[in-house]
Length: 107
Image (cartoon, rainbow, N blue to C red; front, side):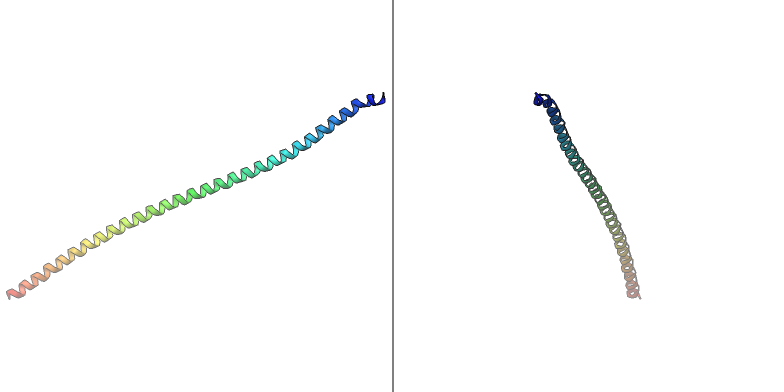
């Protein structure tokens, strides 16, 4: 009879111990999930910084290419201008030389 009277207490105690064990498992699992979540957040932040860095690199690479293009265009314009002026000067010098030769041949 005594065992039958104590049986409900033992079942209640066993149930509470089971709840405590389940709660411990839950809290450890929750801690693991939170750690994993913080790891994922840090990875996301690192990845976004990497993407931001790569976008800056692409932007400055594009700007450098535009500057090189502008420099080449300006340099080719300067070369063209210098070449045409040199050709004009050569033509003027050649005309003057021909005039001098013509005057010398007349006298």
